[in-house]
Length: 169
Image (tube, one colour):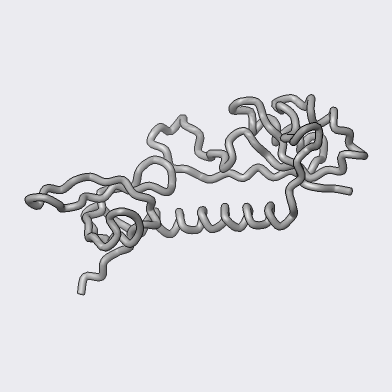
């Protein structure tokens, strides 16, 4: 019976392992997030679970050794001598979370301009107003300037979902 298993890759070899699974016609899932980097030569896609992929196979038909010795791989995640299975519902939930993060990233990437007044609604500074300063590398961090003591603006890094635009009314 086919089930999802967690495959461990060698360091920074997730892409190679994913390609090896496809060459062998194994259904696999490699959750990744697109990132915005300052360096144009940096990876534009980052693994959501660095060093891990999911593979959907029937171990009785395939044989465990084929998955243990595949190029780029470091074996299956196991407890004792038993490979760890992952439910279809968990894979579905991970796919939904990745889609939600991608959607939020696209929505927030063009939402703010430098100098916009924003409201912080999550975290330690919840309830404060700040000035948007810019997006940071990766998709989920922003820098805002918070006026505190003597109206000095202090730069603070926050998750992008922690701020919203303050209506100029």
